[in-house]
Image 1: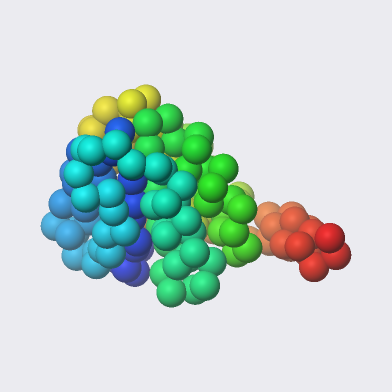
Image 2: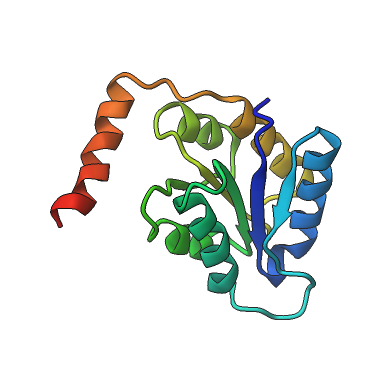
Length: 150
């Protein structure tokens, strides 16, 4: 399992899931920076997506985790940042393939879509799966180059 520190953030809808994921990470020797939210009171998900994605984009963390009700909003926010490859993964296959083929560095899940047990299994698969590189790196390079020519 990749033991490098992660930054995690959620909105109010996924706060409880964030807390369970933090506990799992800490119990498995992975340092966690919590970017919020700090409770179940209503908040604006972009505020937390921006915090996490900006830290990953700047290289301060290799990986991040974002959670909201569906995961869709956080995915949209995170993928606006350069060097961020956020993948919405509400199943194991997507989590594995997001790492193997896309070298995702931000895992996004929907707290109102999946349960705690599945979320932890998705997280474990995402942390354990390496990037295959090769032809997949060539493909990543193509969209990384888009920002330079646009």
